[in-house]
Image (cartoon, rainbow, N blue to C red; front, side):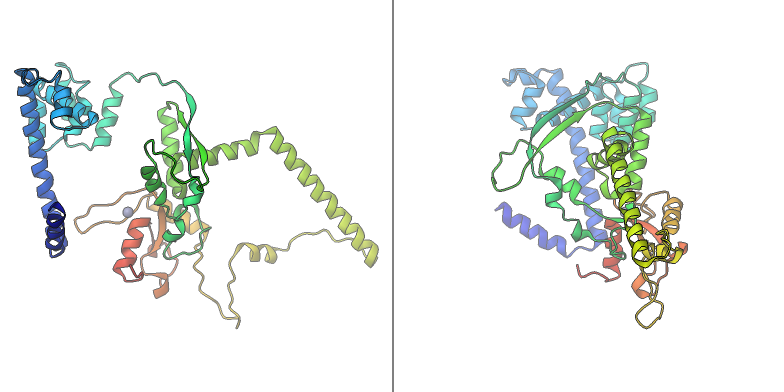
Length: 389
Ligand SMILES: [Zn+2]
């Protein structure tokens, strides 16, 4: 029955225009918000009159989880918000004007006092959840987090599920062009998929031990981390970023690695001088030091500039200085802007996109290049019918 209704709804929605779908979604969110306020009002009464006790529940929490089948976190949020709303009438007003969400209320519930409530409510009004989280964190003493590294179980290695090939940069198939142009949505998805204590059901799967690492960090650390995420958006998950940083540090500081490098260098020097001595013995002419000419070096670095007929070939390679200039000008953010002037602003999976596509003659000029996140790059390409999907 439910299946039939869903199917019917799907087919009705399929006839809607994008604009109608957006309106419908907005209306649904509005009614859900209003319903949440109604639930909070009821909770205030249920607690005030101890209705839950008379109905056979040990607490308001017990009432929410057993009677309404709320998950414990959801019950906690609703109860915290209801109590907060009862103590501070300004909260209900913000809720009614949709200047705060129920989650936002549950977040500020613990820090509001008669003295600070007016100021804090003014501060959080109209803010997004992450911003409220920051405001709240700036007003409370941080809990002490004990640093720890503990094994948590087996998991398929991240490399095993690398689907990044599906997300090849649309205009620049050369995956080594820069750090900030390779898309890898799979990082998020895999984190979502692997949550929980799921049992191991496939013994053939190669598994590796995973660890949970906990520590608290300073504001400066987080700023640097955000910046690092921005400049290497390919590997924007924490493990990849910190893993790279640790590898770089070991390469510079680890005495073992330093010694191995030194030995390698000496061996190379040795074999080079032996080779020169042999050549000298054979030809009788003085050994010429094995230097690389400027043009040879350029050949190594630059992609071929001439075709078989000696004609110049257009290269998709965007010079490093230009990529950096685009990145800096666009402030390391996706520049996609909707018709209603809403900018994406994402800093993840950034790619350099040609405004006039490369395949339609668009060049590598600063004016023709901009940063897009992987998703908006694909959207742009879809809209230009460059891709099949
Ligand atoms: Zn975007």
